[in-house]
Length: 161
Image (cartoon, one colour):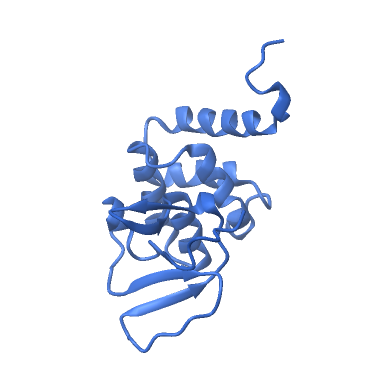
């Protein structure tokens, strides 16, 4: 479902420091909205992209994109993959988002990095490898389990056979 109640969400494009992540410069206020909006302020950038309710949360009273969406948006904006990888790994370390959610969010970008199109798990594994965290394999298992759980038909979820 498209986020109907929110018409504009604070983007963490260059502001992942809101979650105390990454080291990208925060010289502009960035927002995402599903419809075109204009501003005359040079320190404000408005991105036009659709978003779902699952893509954002309220932090300090402000609607902001979740870390998995931030990583995806940064890749759409052609940010440095190593900087994005640091945000991904930092978010997983601090339990700000689930590895499987990152795999889902990274999937549209996999082909650009020479990986099989739509293979968010491969891109997540590559990004974890860039940063080099010893818990990487555990996170990959969690990401794969997340997708296995999502593939189970609703009526059988949680039931034992």
